[in-house]
Length: 70
Ligand SMILES: [Zn+2]
Image 1 (tube, rainbow, N blue to C red):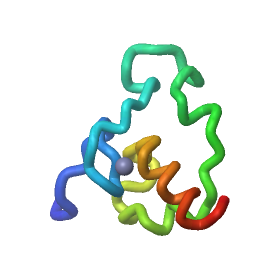
Image 2 (spheres, rainbow, N blue to C red):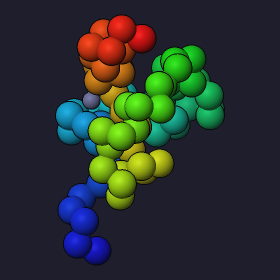
Image 3 (cartoon, rainbow, N blue to C red):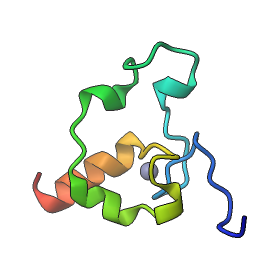
Image 4 (spheres, rainbow, N blue to C red):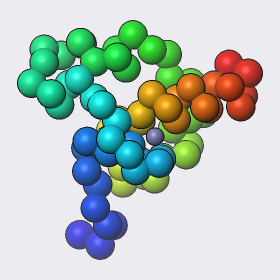
């Protein structure tokens, strides 16, 4: 693979820990992201190889919503 590293524990946008509950040995659906709405536009910021691999972190989601008045 030549697409660089894709760590599922790191946000694909900012590279910080995404605090995904689904990786922390918790039952599916207990992550904060399960209760949030992700506008589809935000996924355009995610590199194609990281889509469905890494969760976006809450910081980036909130920043995106603030910037786009969502
Ligand atoms: Zn982030």
